[in-house]
Length: 322
Image (cartoon, rainbow, N blue to C red; front, side, top):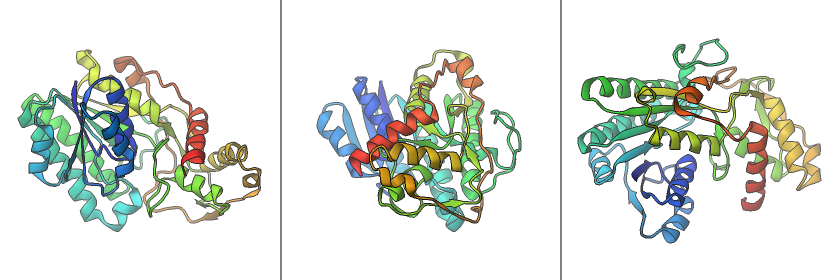
């Protein structure tokens, strides 16, 4: 297959590029390196010179999007500005990238005759819904500008399917973590941020009392979902939104306990570090737990990594690479 991965130099995108290249596919990466890292993909460019291409470009530029889809058959659209706090601080740029950029990509894909457009949606779409576990067709009001942008993307995809016969699958990612997730920067996700703190013998700070919970999802489960979304031949499976998660929730306090346990195998001093607690963060959903029955039934999804299994793999990777 000939596959464009937007945001291919990012955490999730680069893992997808690597997986697809290992499978013998032709892959093109589109990235502007705002949050993506050259070191995530340069080794792949060296290893797969015949089948891997890099296009430096911005999804906010329609011409860049048109150039990126040229000659491609499928799109994995991972490019976005993540982070709820970033969107609260700068809603305009988040909107430009996540909605304007998405619209550019979906228009370019439609015009280029892309067979299927698979995109990164978000569990933030569930907003203030109290329902647990989260089921795809029951959502609440968004709690952040970021959540609004990711929901609008779902609406655009649905309208394009109805209006133009466009084929899409949206994957609502739940707190993805794993190798290559950046622990540095102002908007680092909680797992790499806490790993970095513990490894430096610094005290991590938990937002709130630590009883907020998340369905932390290891990167290899996300790769499996993207692969299934690309290749499914089930007509009922396309033009759908799916939760992409393991289906198990972990509180932040539990997360810290696991991190201390796994990291102290490398450095026993880490077991002595106790986190501090601060106020809850604006825009945060208190609890997040996915029902993955729809993905199992329509796509044959079978996640291989529980949160604890994935966390052991991630901790090992950070210990060897940070």
